[in-house]
Image (cartoon, rainbow, N blue to C red; front, top):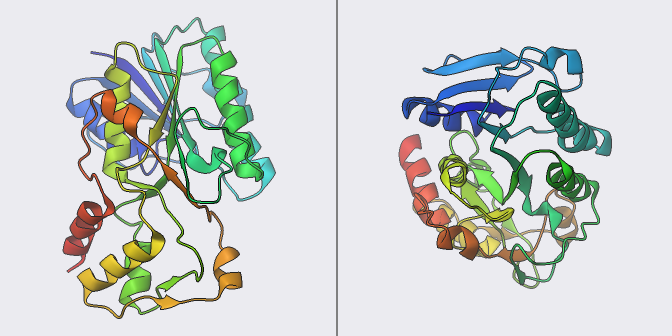
Length: 284
C-alpha cells in the first residue's frame, strides 16, 4: 500500500482521502486549519507560505496530490496558491530526500481562452487572459519543471453536496439565463473528482494532462430547464446580458474528456442529470 499526502485537503481532498484510507493506503491530509475527523485520514497542519512548517512531512511518500485553493479572489492569492505554494512544496520534498513516483496537480479549464462554444481538449491552445487561468497555467509549468513526475488534471466546475447553487436558484425562482447565442458549461461531480484522481494515481503510464469533465458539455439553459423541471419549479427566465456577463467564472467552450475515458475511467455521474438527480433526491 502507498504512503500518500493530500495537500489542500478540503472539499474534494477529504473524500479522496477517506476512499484511499479505506483501500488500505496510509494517507495524510494537510491544510492550514484542523481537518474534520475522518476515519483513516491523518491530519497535518502546515502552511505553504511558511516553509518551516513543512519540515514535519511524513517520509518516503509515494504519491502527492496538490489540491490547494486560493484564499481570495485576486492575483496575489492565486499566485500564492498555485505557483509559490507548489514551488515551496516541491522544494521541501526535494530537500527532505523524498522521491514520490507521482505528483498530481489539480488545475482548471480556466486555462483555456476559447469563448465561442469551441471544442477543446488537452492539446488546445492555452492563452488565458484572466489572472486565474494565467496562474494555474504557471503552476502547471512549475510542476513539469520540477524534480518529480507530474500529472495535471484540469477540472471543470465542481458541484456536489453543499454546492447546489443551481438548485437553490431554480427552487427560489431566481434561475436566469443569458440572452443571445448558446452558452456551454462544463462540470464534474465532486465524487467523480475524487474518482478521477484515484484512477490517475493507479495508471502505470499516464499522460501529462487530462481534462476532468463529465461527458455532457451542456448548454446552460438546458441545465437550468432540467433542474427547474425536476424540482417542479418555474422555468428559468431570460436575464440581463450585462448582469450575467459580469458574473465570475463565465466561459463558453465545450471540453472533451476522450483522453480520460480512453484511459479506462468510468464516471459515476456521466452527465449533470445523474448528478443533480441524486442531489435533489437528498434534499427532500
